[in-house]
Length: 286
Image (cartoon, rainbow, N blue to C red; front, top):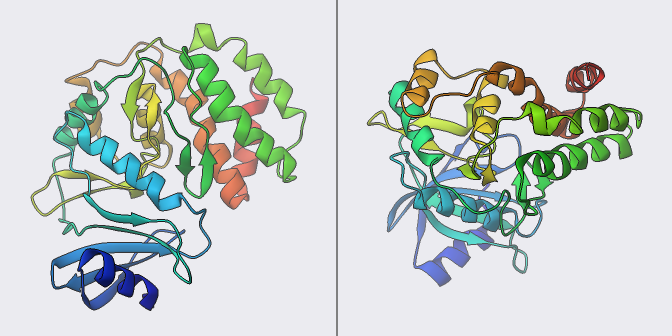
């Protein structure tokens, strides 16, 4: 049920008077509703147990994606608030009507254009979250050190400290990390979605791709593509569209295995189960 503390806050601070609320999917982490109000329809999600800045960080990511020179659609943030007295943290966004299908080729093309937004360093000025887990974005001048120190090592240590994985696997990663300069393709720091799996995009009623639930930072564009391949949900047209703008460097399919260790470790820490054995098998290959 939509907390009255949120509806009261919206009325008092934004003039948005909620008239009705309909439950919708908020993923595995949050509660969510479509609200109808005196100012139109909105998408609202909240979480009583999330970190205080959980939704403000997501809002920052959505705003950053929206500022990029790409024709991808990103929900406009209306209100993002940390918890208040007796009120959970919440995020209010425009409500986007989902279509039945869309143009995957154009989606890939526009993602490649998004990746043309660059920065001087890898990382981001602030940390954020991937799923419900903290994501460190401490800046680095080179991609291999950022990937190792801010992506793999924090997740691997978390899995070890929680007893999900064996400490000896750190040595496996250290061996691979020493070769990353040779293995990973060079790139400029590019703005990426950061958690691009099949559940984090949709097509609107006009067929345009919409990015949701980002974990943004400036990284290697191949990270988004690697994520997209981990669980499926992206057609061949999507990749053809991407490569119509930006050709992939030789050896991409090999690098995908390295890059996808990150989302795999995230899933180990969030869900455990068979993800643990998959991550261990991958680390034991190195």
